[in-house]
Length: 166
Image 1 (cartoon, rainbow, N blue to C red):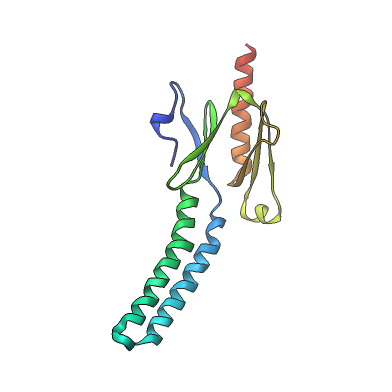
Image 2 (image 1 turned 180 degrees about the horizontal axis):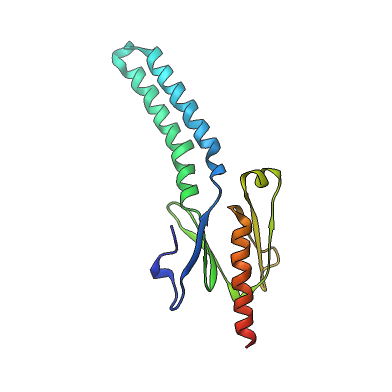
């Protein structure tokens, strides 16, 4: 889900859009399996006792748990994006209330990344972008193929700085 055209400035275009690594969905997927198994097992064990109300109560509880522990984390993952344009980096997140952070490429001083052993295995990492006003910088967690994203940002930052020097 790239940055919408209504949010792009004149002459700006999307370079790359990514979201956090799919590893964020491992726990919700495992919980989906557990909830589905427990719900179906419980509903089968309940049988037709009490005109089937117990069975429907178990199914309703399983659906609510599925929505809370599976669907909401999936939506949170799906709607959290990092977009690189030829002028800025945009982080957007949120399901009902969307929040975002924008860093113009011309204000970036440093771009670095961190990868632990799990990140190296899964080919992801944390990208840290420092600008002139920020002491702690913008941390983009669990970026897939972080080296590729780092390289694209660095190239655009050098290009923007060279244009400012001319």
